[in-house]
Structures are given as C-alpha cells and as structure tokens.
Image 1 (tube, one colour):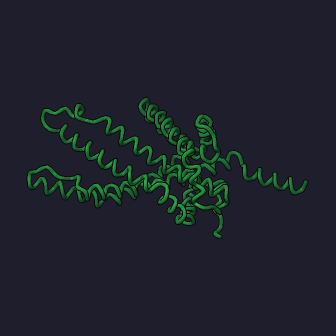
Image 2 (cartoon, rainbow, N blue to C red):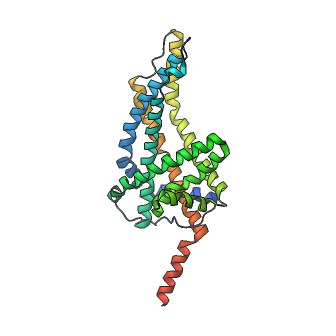
Image 3 (cartoon, rainbow, N blue to C red):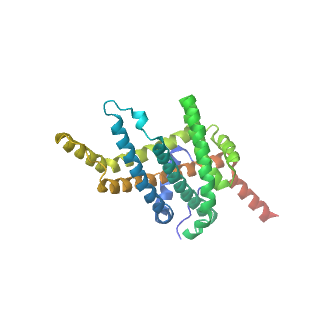
Length: 286
C-alpha cells in the first residue's frame, strides 16, 4: 500500500499547493474513478441542458439587438436563472464527491472502497447545496453593497464546505468557524484561491480554443455570404458539452487546495494532531 498522505499539518503558502499536487498524483486514479462514477453522468446531463439554455439566450439577445427591438423585453430571466441553478448544482455535486472522498480517505487512512462514499452523498450534498445558496446570497449582497466586502466574504466562506464535511457542523456553526480559522490568514487563503483560479482559467481557455475557432470560422463565412451564422449545430452542442464538463471537473483542484489549506489552518491554530500525540503518550504511561 502507498504511503498515506498527511492532511493534518501546518503548511506555508507554497507547501499547500505542492502538497495538493502530491495528493492528486497519489490518488488521481481513485479520485478520477469517483468523479467518473458519481459526478460525470450528472455533468453530462446538465451540460446538455446548459448548452440549449445558453443557445436560446443567445438567439434572444440577437433578436434584441435588431433595430427597434427592446433587448431587455426579449431577454429571458427565467433562462438565466435556470442556467445559474444548473451551475450551482454542478459545483455542489462536485464538491460533495471531492470533499467526501477526502474525508473518507482521512478517516480510513487511505484504505477504503469507492462504494463507501455513496451512502453519505445525499445527506452531505443537501447540506452543501443549502450552504452554497446561503453563502452565495451573502456574497452577492456584500458585493452589491461594496466590492471589497464581497471579495472578503468570498474567501472566508470558501472554508464553509470543508468545515461542514470534515467537522460535521451545522451551517450556522460552519459560518462562525470559517471566520475563526481565517483570522490572520485571509491573504494567504486568498492567494491560494487566486492561484487555483488562474490554473483553472488558463486550462479552460486552452480547452475552449477549438470551440472559439469553430464559432469564428462560421461567423466569418456567414459574414461573407451576408447570412445569419448557424452557430448551434449538433457538433457545437456535443463539443460545448464535453468542454463545459471537463472545465467543471477542473474545479476539483480548487476543492483540494482549500481542503489542504483548511487542515493547515486548523493545525496552526489548534494543534489537534499534537494534542492527540500527547494524549496517546499519557495513556501509554498511565
């Protein structure tokens, strides 16, 4: 059996990222299989729905930019709400599986079967869905009031999901706990999230190049022929679904980054691992 990855230890900024990649290298087969079984089918379904919703929104916007048309009158807010809802469900499902995988990995010291994740998914997913909605509302309201508080809360609340899963706390307690852990470590956590975001963004842009090129070529030919471009063909739908699915799965990296950072913050502030060792030595010497 391979060496068990140690989550519970203090880490500096660079070590959090390096150790996150170490965990991915060690567990990419099992984690990948878990994503394949529990996440991919859902992402494919929502990906197809998202493509149809977005194509419908684009058609509506094209009508809105015609002379004499009212863009906001034609704009479908229900379609936009449906799109955001599906994306919220995607990230909830993904975070549920990734965090449940890590939690089981820690509790079983790396020795577990993927089937052991399944019984906890529905309960954990429900908790995280409610948490994501509440956190999203708080962050949006804070951003509308002033951008800086929105960014601040966004970083603080990044710890809510790990706290709910790893500590089995209620949403209210997880919100309070996130402020406790982030104290004096906001900038470090912000930097870790920025690096994760940049990696995912660059990967997503590179992945989208074929789709962007396809749309550009179709638009160019349509302009030469002075006709309306047929952008949303069956090939576009398939390609867009595949790309959006892979892009969503890429956020696994962010969940691993923030999980490693969470355990680093807990060890730094509370030293539970050290206390466990002291208790064990006390019991042995008793």
